[in-house]
Amino acid sequence: MKELDAWLAAAGRRAGVDPADIPTRLVLDLARDVAHGVVRPGAPVTAYLLGVAVGRGADPAELAARLSELAVSWSPGEGAEPPIP
Image (cartoon, rainbow, N blue to C red):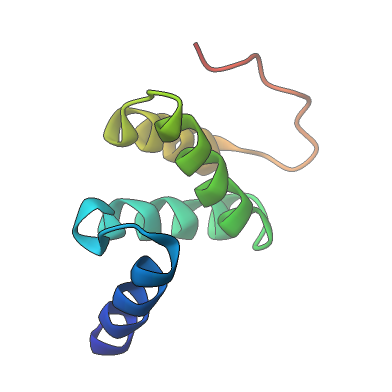
């Protein structure tokens, strides 16, 4: 993960975000669950969705767990889910 750490340090400086504030493992685990349980392109978009929700006050660990649970139980062709409270 040395390369990932270097990337996050450089990207964090560019974005004005301390990489230590990013729960990297949590985001990677969520992206994995979405990529494998739903569809690969959904992984980065869901990670972004998590970031937006956290920026609006959501608890990252709680929301990531809920989204991972949804992704793991997802079946192709499912309809829209109700909004996450």
